[in-house]
Length: 145
Image (cartoon, rainbow, N blue to C red):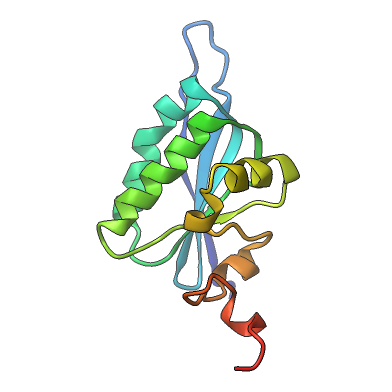
């Protein structure tokens, strides 16, 4: 039996003209971690509407939270603000989210702003689940220990 359970967390409701939102959130558990997938475009308008749902997931998470940005098609500074808000929310409970992202432009945005040092992006879910020690390197990849 699979350890992975999917559940739909949120979706933007259609606007008055009937067009669906440009983003959606999906979540599932892998082992003891909650994975929150951000799908679509995350600009000022969408992050304002997604913020409440993301914070609700942070509040409900009982373990590690992995924020998977791989399905996101657009991510700007408003999205960074959303990630930092999620980090602050979990930090009040001694937790820290990890970000999963392999797209070079988003990674560059995370590094240039210094947010990569806080959120420690990883290219895959498996890498994000690897414990990170104080120097920021995954425990299994440290040499001499």
